[in-house]
Length: 111
Image (cartoon, rainbow, N blue to C red; front, top):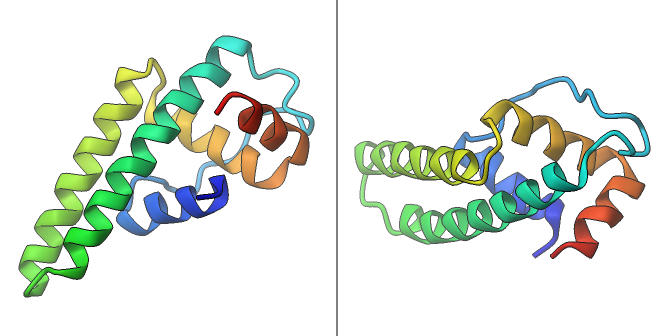
């Protein structure tokens, strides 16, 4: 699954919010450590997103779906913070990856 699709799944569940990107256009100011943390978090978020997407599809009612979205959001936030990033940092990097082909390539090289 592409980075953009993974981010879209996380956005659909509600982890990602619109946060202005602060990384240079070429992603040059994103440290190697942050890149590795992001890649680790992104893979965990994608896994959680996939799991909950399937569970949401089987949800019987709105209340259950809301409960599942909240659980997914919490698990995703924990995965991000466990990687060493804040949710805001993760969101900024995700937005930068979506708009910056050079940064996207750097992320793909670490997967």
